[in-house]
Length: 246
Image (cartoon, rainbow, N blue to C red):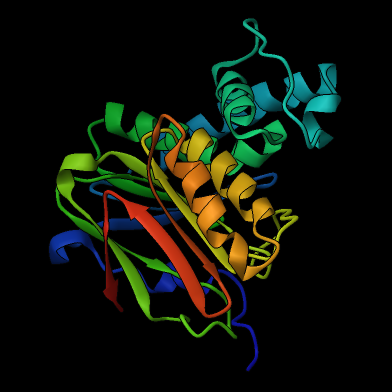
């Protein structure tokens, strides 16, 4: 079976509560966001992305190791807020700071829209920050050859929102994964932490027997609300969500 092309999942969203929400994309440099919001706030979203990318690019120019390090770096109290979130999340997860970039940017944009009075879902390369006043169902895609393909959704209650849902995979997307997990999805109120921990847990899964160890590791960390890990025909899960058939 052929892999589906592009960001196909962007066309499978259904408006919360059946409402006619505004959908738009925001792209700048490597950032490619899909946003569904309760009002048209693309100007605010683009303004936030430009500000975030400017601060990140300046920091990388002054600290080149930040871009390519696969291990945590020291915290920098003088760094921009986005960079500090990434540095702190990476230290908790034991990975390089760029492992947290997609989740961190999604959350920063979502918080900007929240401050502007909009509920929203901000998706950045499959990593989402969700601020809604209703429950939400999030699909998990484990690749074209997974027995769980198109079969699982996570149901999140309104009480745990806003929250981030971030996924790492060895088979899908452009992000680096050193493990063999088909999908590692992590739930947290901290987008940078969810993204970094999804990467770290994915790196732990070299065989299906590593699923339990990776799940236990995520459960031991403060700040995480749940995790779902899929490798081959097995999965491990815990947390503040229910799993339903798609």
